[in-house]
Length: 259
Image 1 (tube, rainbow, N blue to C red):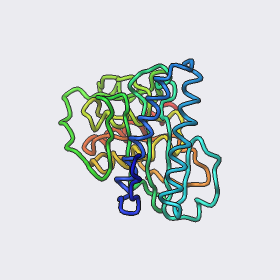
Image 2 (cartoon, rainbow, N blue to C red):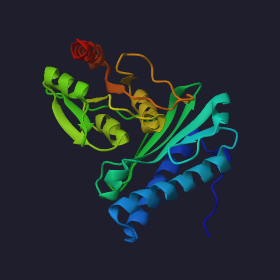
Image 3 (cartoon, helix red, strand yellow):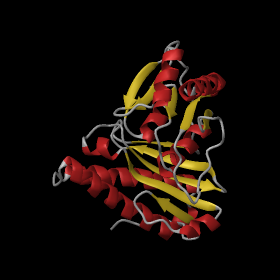
Image 4 (spheres, one colour):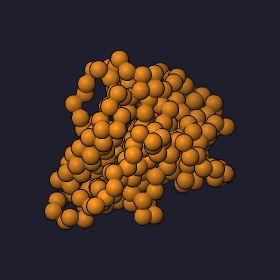
């Protein structure tokens, strides 16, 4: 018989990492069942992981708010300072295709700021979880920068900035996987302007910020979470030493598009 964890003694960081890890292992088992087509697998995985995460958070942090991609929104969260924001499967297509570039996001916003996050990459090295409360040293930037972009619909601003920087494009799926690629030394810039929601970026942004990366909207303004409208269409995550140059390039590109 498995002994229940004493969640009252767990830090929020330990809880977030534990939940992301367990949800990732559940998703691997759902996929290993062999019962689903690729499209059906994505739906089954989303719903199964969501049930686990939502039940677990309501059991362990009942006083906090909760926002999930797969759960009906509850406006009560707007009155709460601490709100957990989760994405049970970020990169559903990649998960269904058995690619490694998908993730599980578990994070917390406090008064709108992404302060805590855990991002699980269940198909990376047998399962990897990166945490905001346990930052690791960032690998040095290479001479030729690398920009992660969508596999299927890279944003026009990202393509234009990459060309100006002479940066190599690295196609990848999940927003969480893209952000973690910078921390893991596989990329240096993540510029997105094609539309996202709060659960796509909250936990990854918390982890990235804790590792000393620049995180903002593409106009340089802060990323604000736990809003009534959860649409958060763009973001820039990169090393701080590159941020001003990239933000200036984005402004130039947008001005040229508008002209």
